[in-house]
Image (cartoon, rainbow over all chains, first blue to last red; front, side, top):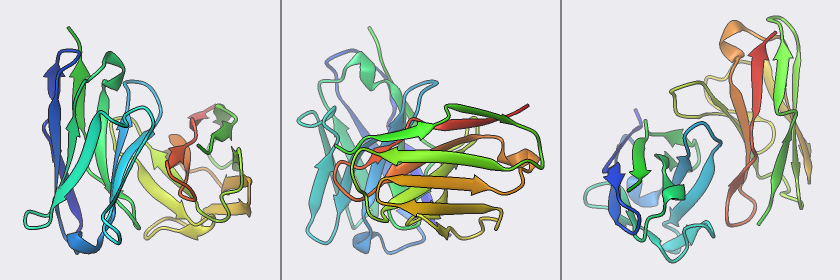
Length: 114
Length: 107
C-alpha cells in the first residue's frame, strides 16, 4: 500500500523559512517522480514543484522559483521542500503526490503571517 | 505556461442526472490530461489519466474524452458521493498546471 506522510508545516513570519518533508512507503521511491502541490484556504490546486529521477530534474512554478528547493533522500524514501523568503501568499495546505498513479498525502498546513 | 479553463464553475444537478464538465487548454496538451476529484477536508483523488483511462477503483460512470485543447469529464448518473469539486491537470509541459475547478453541487 502506498503511503505518503507530510510534516513540517506551521506558522512562520513573512521572510522566514520552513522545510517540509514527505515520508513515503509502498513503492520504489528511487524510480518515482514526486510533486508538491498546494492549496490556499478555500481555493484551488496549484502545482509547486517536481523531482524526476530520470535526469534528477527539478521543476518549479514561476511563483516559487528561486525561493523553494525540492530534494530527496533515497535512503529515507523522503522528499523535501525547502521554502525560503516566505510570503503571505504562500499560505496553503501543501501536499506531496506520487507521479503515475498520483496518490497524495494528507497535507500539511503552512501559515505565513506576522 | 499552459492555462486550463474549466467550465462551468458550478454545476447544480440532482442525483441520477448526467454531469458534463469541460476543460479547455490554452495550447495543445495532446493526451496528457488528468482529472481529479476533491471532497471537503480530503486530498484530491485521481479519477482519469491520459484523457480517458480510469484510475484503479474508479467506477465506470466516470468517463473522459477529448484531445488537443478541449476535454470533457462525464459522470453518467450522479451518485450522492459524487458531489465534490473536480479539477483537470495537464502534464504536457512544465510547469504542470491545474484548472480552477468545477464544483458539482446538489440541486
